[in-house]
Amino acid sequence: VVIAITGGNGDVGTELSKQLSKVEEVSKILLTCRTQAKAEATIASLVEATGKDASFFDYVLLDVMDIKTIVASLDKFPTVDRLLLNVGGLSKCQIHEQSGAVDCMVLNTMGHAVLAEGLIKKNKIAKGGRIIYVGSEVCRSVYSFAGLKPEYLGKFGEKDIEWAIGQNYKDFASGIIPIRTQLGDYANAKIIGTMYTSQLAKEHPDLTILTTSPGAIHGKDGKGTGFANEGLFPMKPLMKYAPWMFKLMQVTQDLDVGVARIVDGTLVGEPKWENGSVIMSPPPFWGARGPPVDNRPMVPYLADEDLCEKAAIAVREWNTKWAANAGVTL
Image (cartoon, rainbow, N blue to C red; front, side):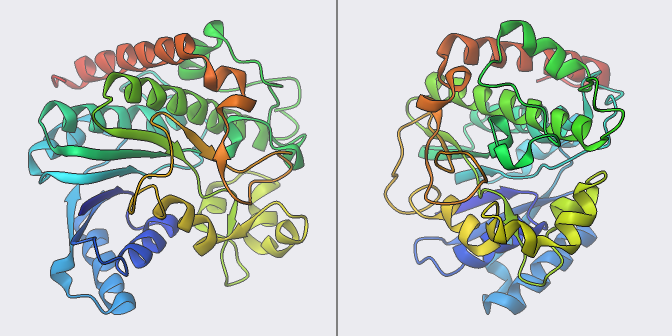
């Protein structure tokens, strides 16, 4: 089994490679990185950490914020059995100049859509292969984040799709609590990304395509994970320097535990989940930890197939404009 992972040099990507290197059926891990230096450094660290030969790892250069690099990378991919759309995170609450979309939407969703559909079109996903989108519990309620994250109370409709893609989140409190805009953009990106993925699964029943999440994770070094580095106040100081507090509050879980969700029965082994599933932490949605379940029955907009189709149409329309602005053809 050949597995391609976007964002292979982050916390989750590195832990994924470590866990997958122990799985007998995995024959190669292909990482995507923005620069050759980062790719070579990541592979060197993984060789040291796993004891695997350097030939077990390979890389393709691309930047999900740069559509030219995504399109140029498609022919450089070998045929892969698994594609893990992992890169993502918080952004700078800006509009991405070339696409006109929110930067967080491009980072977490739009770039991945270009990559996934490009590889499918070029028959680079093996027969019976799997495409896994790494989503986030912020695409629905996380009650421990009350006040920091906008709360949609299960309501996200067709009228919300365009503004979620094209406008940074703003509300009465975001000027006082900057993280609300940042988490609002992130939540919108993951909502649209998750719905897009469910529609892609419906269009390609020959593949296994679904969304999963490692949950809210903390590192074991007492300093949090890289996700918190981009967080605005008060997330960065809390999650970077006091991750133990979130663990005590039953909000987060260890990095290796969260990543195991993505590995077992999702990337490798017999598939556990129905095509199009949204595999995340269980109710009561206080935090983002615990044995994962399909969240669609509990989140109406994620279960709405018509809405998922409309979200996918919107993503493709925005990507078509992005490609035209960049002078490339999808």
